[in-house]
Length: 254
Image (cartoon, rainbow, N blue to C red; front, side, top):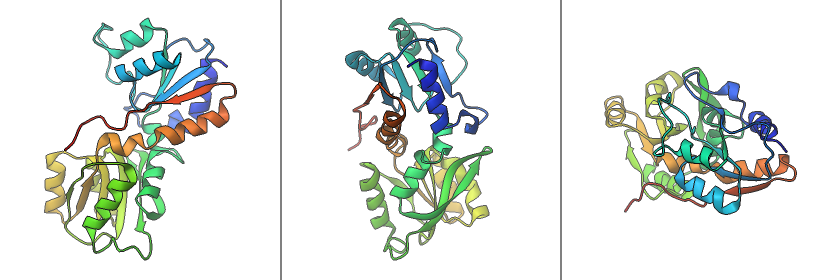
């Protein structure tokens, strides 16, 4: 199988056309005509992923976060891309296209958050988020602390930053850095935003506007996709061995 075949499969799962205009998805480095038999799936195409790729004999890494995001002025030894190229390892990145895709990160996050009948939440013209009602019969509506503990356990987060101003009835999920979606909540009749991280100004906005904001960690709200994504790839990439990153946290918390 060629790397270009894998690009086509990734594009089929998470169409690159569904990414935000500011994003960078697709083949980041490498020769699309090279053969590939061992692939590593990871959240970040960083030096840790490179170490794992070399350990498992992978010549292709598929990451969520783009290896190349901001315009490059130079490719030097302090940049991971230098080392991927030096070691002959290609990288495919599926960023906001995987956030928005059917069966992607936010669909999975919606399921883990016990949200029913999810609808797309459009941000920057892309269906990055989802929103819906909490499952019928849950005790979480009037017990937000219990709901936060439930969310932490479901996604594997050790800590949550939150501000609660009202009962939780209709919630939105936006994985990663989704704090800016707060400004859309009233338009959609949403009272709660569940995301990975928010800035101080986002918590102030939630407080001023009587909204709930729950931040469970950027890494934690997105790393949930690595193994399911790998399983989907296994069914589609005949003759290719798929490995996954064993990283379970990035920022240490106490």
